[in-house]
Image (cartoon, rainbow, N blue to C red; front, side, top):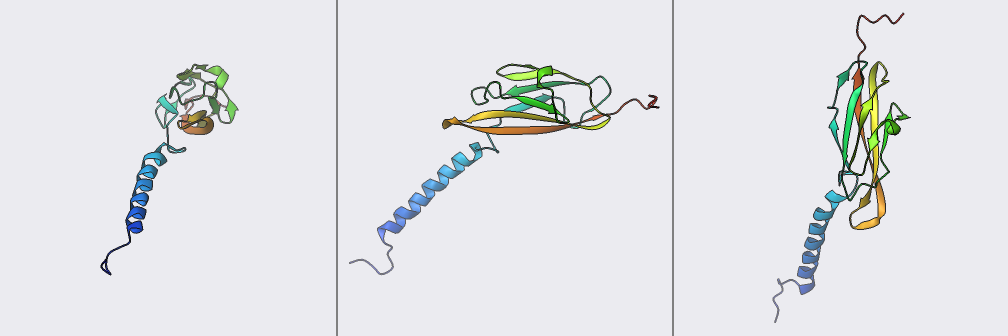
Length: 141
């Protein structure tokens, strides 16, 4: 005879199922967009860069096997400057000029494939702010 305090077997199985689902969630959620996988890494410029008229060097690395080739775009203050860069399957690099005085926003966009569903895509973007400070003795009259 079973004690009044003993639990039915299905309760123990239910808790085990909840535990397994919890472990799966912990394993899979970090790899879901927008938290991951990271598709692009900006090597240069450093965040908060201050430059003059000479522009700056951009070097971006893509995560191979996940990033979709040909999906990279670079927008400087809203204008597409991707064609000013040399882009391959593992990254993009180039020298960007024609910045506006003050704060400039460089937005980098790329698409990637979800690792466990190769036919599904997601997008990632990253924004960098570059400060262009013209020389103080420049006549702007």
